[in-house]
Image 1 (cartoon, helix red, strand yellow):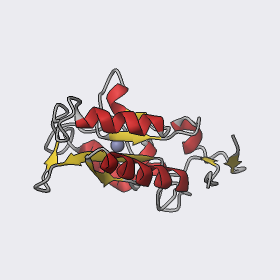
Image 2 (tube, helix red, strand yellow):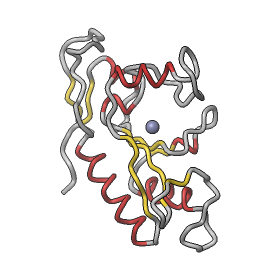
Image 3 (tube, helix red, strand yellow):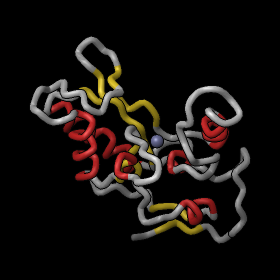
Length: 165
Ligand SMILES: [Zn+2]
């Protein structure tokens, strides 16, 4: 696997950080494949989140800690794959256009939970699923790390941006 390694080692996650402003093209491509493949088996997948700025991540981290609501992430700004355009979040939508957050929902009536069916497709496409995490289950979360740790990403290492097609 090829990486574009920048030749500086400082960690700058301020406004001038070299963070992508959109999804990595491979993630973008597989996001679209996921939606199409799910639609083919009768599941309407909505992508609720893609790339997130460090500021947005910090705000989300504050939720359930210094601000109200439930804790939804364990990642501070710069520590989420969303910050590097390498993660998306999904939800399942029913025929009335309502987002379904219950992981036991079986809208296509094939005896399998839709959320898990989508996760299976995503994993086939190469995503890692937050629902498989042991400590903090993040069911909507899908990421592609390209073999890079958050520490490497913070130091400026980036995945190659070439797609297969
Ligand atoms: Zn996520």
